[in-house]
Amino acid sequence: MKKVLGLLGVAAACGLCCAVPVGVPLLGGLAASGMGWALGWEAAAVAALVGGVVLLVWARRRQASAARCAPKAASSAGCGCSNTGAAGKRGVA
Image (cartoon, rainbow, N blue to C red; front, side, top):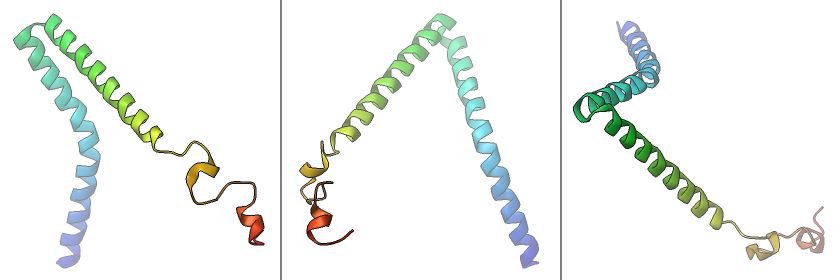
Protein backbone atom coordinates (compact mmCIF):
# COMPACT_ATOMS: atom_id res chain seq x y z
CA MET A 1 0.00 0.00 0.00
CA LYS A 2 2.88 2.38 0.80
CA LYS A 3 4.44 1.81 -2.60
CA VAL A 4 1.17 2.60 -4.35
CA LEU A 5 0.73 5.80 -2.35
CA GLY A 6 4.33 6.77 -3.06
CA LEU A 7 3.87 6.24 -6.78
CA LEU A 8 0.61 8.16 -6.66
CA GLY A 9 2.40 11.04 -4.93
CA VAL A 10 5.14 11.08 -7.56
CA ALA A 11 2.55 11.01 -10.34
CA ALA A 12 0.68 13.90 -8.72
CA ALA A 13 3.90 15.90 -8.39
CA CYS A 14 4.75 15.27 -12.05
CA GLY A 15 1.27 16.29 -13.13
CA LEU A 16 1.43 19.48 -11.09
CA CYS A 17 4.90 20.31 -12.35
CA CYS A 18 3.71 20.01 -15.95
CA ALA A 19 0.39 21.75 -15.35
CA VAL A 20 1.75 24.91 -13.72
CA PRO A 21 3.76 26.19 -16.73
CA VAL A 22 0.75 25.53 -18.95
CA GLY A 23 -1.81 26.98 -16.54
CA VAL A 24 -0.10 30.28 -15.69
CA PRO A 25 -0.33 31.75 -19.22
CA LEU A 26 -3.94 30.60 -19.41
CA LEU A 27 -4.74 32.43 -16.19
CA GLY A 28 -2.90 35.50 -17.48
CA GLY A 29 -4.94 35.41 -20.66
CA LEU A 30 -8.17 35.10 -18.70
CA ALA A 31 -7.17 38.07 -16.52
CA ALA A 32 -6.32 40.17 -19.59
CA SER A 33 -9.61 39.20 -21.22
CA GLY A 34 -11.55 40.15 -18.11
CA MET A 35 -9.75 43.48 -17.93
CA GLY A 36 -10.51 44.05 -21.60
CA TRP A 37 -14.21 43.45 -21.08
CA ALA A 38 -14.34 45.57 -17.92
CA LEU A 39 -12.24 48.57 -19.00
CA GLY A 40 -12.46 48.39 -22.75
CA TRP A 41 -9.85 46.91 -25.05
CA GLU A 42 -7.98 50.19 -25.56
CA ALA A 43 -7.48 50.62 -21.82
CA ALA A 44 -6.39 46.99 -21.49
CA ALA A 45 -3.83 47.48 -24.28
CA VAL A 46 -2.47 50.63 -22.61
CA ALA A 47 -2.29 48.83 -19.26
CA ALA A 48 -0.39 45.94 -20.86
CA LEU A 49 2.01 48.37 -22.54
CA VAL A 50 2.63 50.24 -19.29
CA GLY A 51 3.14 46.94 -17.46
CA GLY A 52 5.65 45.79 -20.07
CA VAL A 53 7.60 49.05 -19.82
CA VAL A 54 7.64 48.83 -16.02
CA LEU A 55 8.95 45.25 -16.17
CA LEU A 56 11.62 46.25 -18.71
CA VAL A 57 12.82 49.18 -16.58
CA TRP A 58 12.88 47.00 -13.47
CA ALA A 59 14.89 44.28 -15.24
CA ARG A 60 17.41 46.78 -16.61
CA ARG A 61 17.91 48.41 -13.21
CA ARG A 62 18.37 45.03 -11.59
CA GLN A 63 20.90 44.00 -14.23
CA ALA A 64 22.78 47.30 -13.88
CA SER A 65 22.99 47.01 -10.09
CA ALA A 66 24.29 43.45 -10.39
CA ALA A 67 26.96 44.54 -12.87
CA ARG A 68 28.11 47.40 -10.62
CA CYS A 69 29.33 45.08 -7.85
CA ALA A 70 31.98 43.38 -9.95
CA PRO A 71 35.53 44.74 -9.64
CA LYS A 72 36.84 46.62 -12.67
CA ALA A 73 40.04 44.61 -12.90
CA ALA A 74 41.50 41.58 -11.18
CA SER A 75 44.22 43.70 -9.59
CA SER A 76 41.60 45.91 -7.92
CA ALA A 77 39.92 42.92 -6.31
CA GLY A 78 42.00 43.36 -3.17
CA CYS A 79 43.15 39.75 -2.99
CA GLY A 80 46.18 40.08 -5.25
CA CYS A 81 44.83 37.60 -7.74
CA SER A 82 45.89 39.47 -10.87
CA ASN A 83 47.41 37.64 -13.80
CA THR A 84 50.83 39.21 -13.34
CA GLY A 85 52.30 37.31 -10.49
CA ALA A 86 50.43 36.39 -7.33
CA ALA A 87 50.74 32.73 -8.26
CA GLY A 88 54.27 33.09 -9.61
CA LYS A 89 55.57 34.73 -6.43
CA ARG A 90 54.57 31.75 -4.35
CA GLY A 91 55.95 29.27 -6.79
CA VAL A 92 52.55 27.90 -7.69
CA ALA A 93 52.13 27.06 -11.35
